Amino acid sequence: MATTNTQRGFTSNLGAILAAAGGAVGLGNIWRFPYMLGQNGGGAFLLVYVFFVLLIGVPLMMTEFIIGRRSQSNVVGAYRKLSNGSKGWMLLGVFGIVAAFLIYAFYSVVAGWTLNYIVLSCSGGLAGKDPTAITTLFSDFTQGSFWPLLYQLLFLSLTATVITMGVQKGIEKVSKVLMPILFLLLLLMCVRSVTLDGAAEGLRFLFKPDFSKLNGTCILSALGQSFFSLSIGMGAMVTYGSYIRKQDKLFPTSLWIAGCDSLVAILAGIVIFPAVFAFGMNPASGPELVYIVLPNVFNSMPAGTLFAVIFFMLLGIAALTSTISLLEILVAFGVEELHWKRRTASFVSTLLVFVIGIFCTLSFGILKDFHIFSRTIFDLFDLITASYLMPIGALMMTIFLGWFFPKAEVRDELSNGGAIKAKAFELYYFVLRYLSPLALIIIIISGIIG
Ligand code: PFF
Image 1 (tube, helix red, strand yellow):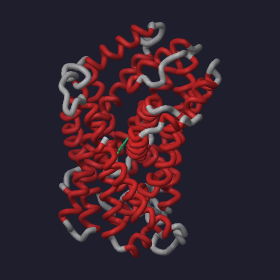
Image 2: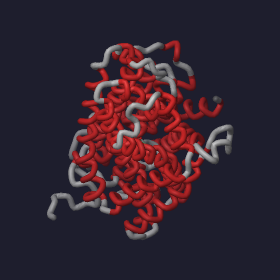
Image 3: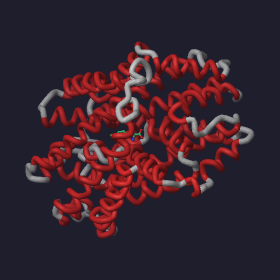
Image 4: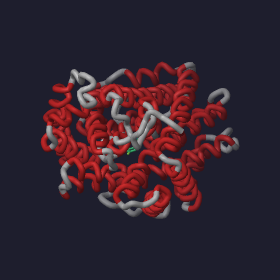
């Protein structure tokens, strides 16, 4: 099929935006963001989060895109090429690969849960159950071994199938279909939620900041969440950046992606909190918020089964477009660096992730008392990646592009070889060189000191 695009990646700007927004929008927006916000005091967390997205998230996403598009490479190849073969900088790429493995391993556990909940809600298995029964259902399922592992494997296989179909026919096509469906389903859920009696209390919780609730942990969590949600700091956006066409504008593209991502997080909050408050549930219940609290909410509302099906489908779609971007990091590396076939790279990466993922799944069941640094394996992977690996990866990336890579080349990439003006270049460069590293250093140190 003839297209005007002769390069390796996406065929259009819209395709790039939807694929990268698909990578960004995920369980992080619909599962993690609401419970983080619930545990960290509501509206104030939202403000800090949006502030980080704009101040650090968007420039860092541009940074990853510049590195990816300039090098036309996977994350390891990107640093090798742009640093003229420096082993040290290549390690930064390897760091990204390790982070992708760890994230994919624990992420696929929760992604697998969504499959179980889609099946449960479609078959009426949640309907009519009292709160105790719903809690028992969740803990029996997650503490088991066979079913959660099977669903995890199914989700990993689904992702591998899409990835094997290729960048244009797999990632781009699937994102173009699934992302609009995701938005539609989400809007439908919002209408349902805000028209419930007592919804206003939930909206107040989400949007009215109470700054007395802000502390160091809150701020670090908001930063971690913004990295995790935008998929920044470990190479996902470097990989996707290498697929963006040379004529596409990187600044508006990044803004669109970050905008979609934050919008979905806020819409998820608008779905969840009014419903949680309307039915007197606890907004700070943590990771089980969407798996225990929401099924109870659905059971108490008219046409609840239908809304349960819609909700878990949209959660599954969000998870899938993200697992696709996680696997693509690994597969692009396997294909370009190790010269494997795409199919082999998908298979081997999926298998390895599953092997590590088994420990994450079992850390809810037979390994739940096995703690490292007083955390389960699952919690440890979540904490290490979102609060440490991603910020550290991002810091190294800003140092590379801001301090080691020639400024003229950064300008050249951002202005598409001089074809566009890139008016805010100096501002971007200032943020890249000074503001982002400084903010990242402060946050990483304060996280370590605790
Ligand atoms: N951004 C995804 C989410 O919010 O669910 C998680 C994620 C996907 C992180 C891909 C990193 C990544 F490379």
